[in-house]
Each structure stands twice: as structure tokens, then as C-alpha cells.
Amino acid sequence: MIWTSTTKGDDKIIAYFNHTIYKGNPKEADLKTVMTELENQKSIPSSLMSIPLSYLREVNLEDGKNYIEVLFGSESTEHLKINEEKRRKEIFDFLKTNIPKSTNYVDHYSKMRAGKKPLIAMFFISALFLWTFYIARGIESGNQYEVVGGHYNSMAGIVIALASFGTIKVMLIFSSFLLISLLGFIQKTRNPKVISTIKIIR
Image 1 (tube, rainbow, N blue to C red):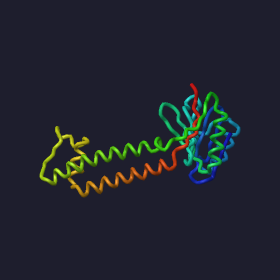
Image 2: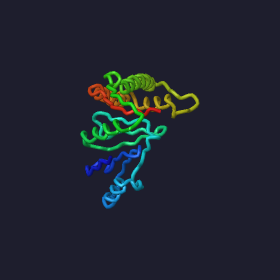
Image 3: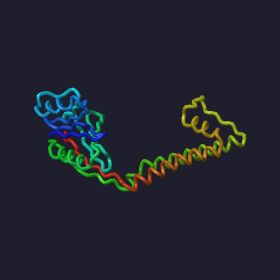
Image 4: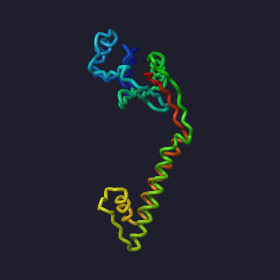
């Protein structure tokens, strides 16, 4: 099966046959030749990337994303870029039906699970703020601080460096970080992920 697209941002060719996923963006002048070679299955054009099923681990389709995620090898990832939602689902459903020795499921994230990472970030930033603010107040009161061993690239060194800007700037810096984390938390919990997955069974 071969899918083609002329939409900007899409992969021009996505194909699946001989237990292999292909994708690529050949030059316009070479597109017809590549298509002919694919359709006749005489040879695989060098302009296309191939992912044999023997390397494939899983295929993911996340609601709202303009690509299908393909995981293969030990930790490699490739995106099949398809902007049109209907076409994206069509390709995913085809792979779901035609990839042998696979199972599929839909993972609905809960709000807490979706917001876990930004929530952890907020706690970490808050703790770092309290530490930095405490040191900043100490510096403004005339206290001197130094890192044991002179390792100023450590966390303590970073805290002292930030604290040296003073309490007002420390509050402004960390307020910005906390605001970014809060907005991330709101966004992720408002629209929790829904991911359809094709898992290869070994």
C-alpha cells in the first residue's frame, strides 16, 4: 500500500509492503520514478527510509499530533508526518490490520497522569526557590557563602549564583518558571493524552 501527499509538511511518500514501512521525500523530478519502482516492487529507491518489521517495536498515534510515531531498534524513533487527520487515521488503521504478530490498544491518560511531569516540575522549582531565596536574604544581610570544593557547576553553586542577583530578581526569575510549569499543567490536564498503540509481539 502506498500513500502520497503534496501537502506542505507531509512526508511525500509513505508505504507498507514486504513487511516493511517506507517513508521519504524525493525531489519532485524523481517522484514519478520512485513511485514506479515502488509499485513494481523491483527495487527500493535509495531516497526512501525503510523500517523492517524485524526492527519495529511499536507504532503510536496520539490525538492532536500531526504524525504517526514509529519506534524501532533499541531506542530509535521516526515520525510519519501526515497533517490530515483522516489520512493519518487511515494509515494507522491499515498498519494495525496488516502488521502481523501485533496487538493494539488505546491508552486514555487520566488528568493526574497527564499533569504529573509539570506538577513534579512545580514542586522542584518551588523547593529550589525557597533554597535560593533563603541564600539571597542571607547575602543581603551580609552573610558569605561558598561551595565546598569550589564546584560551582553543582546545584549548590547554581543556587548561590542565582541568589547573588538579590531577592527581588530571584522572585521574578522563579515566578516565570512557576508560571510556565503551571500553564503546562493546565494545558495537559485540560486535554489529557489519548494514544492508540500497535505493539509488536516478540
